[in-house]
Image (cartoon, rainbow, N blue to C red; front, side, top):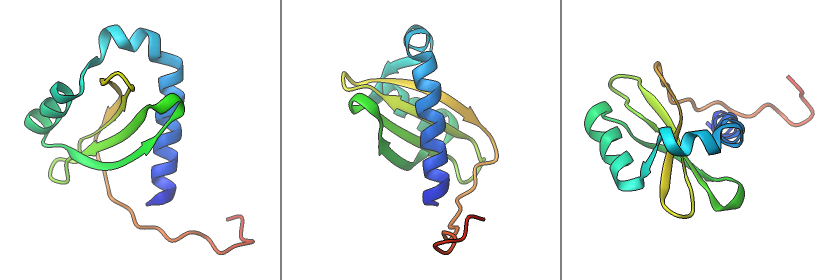
Length: 103
């Protein structure tokens, strides 16, 4: 789970860095409006959360019923941007490899 979270966070941060300026006009809204839309239209709830650069909050929302998922980034000013979305979300609980094992 932690490894998937780290991969998801890394993806979100990379996409955010590349698209912050263009996304603000297209895929961003006040946080309450974004959360309401994700819950009502897609049945998604928060599955994970983490801090990114410059005080931004990265979250993964998903629906256990439909498998839809969305990654959001919330700026310190409360503006929430959609970074990525898709289907087939699964919760994983993978063990970390043993120390010294690069597999």
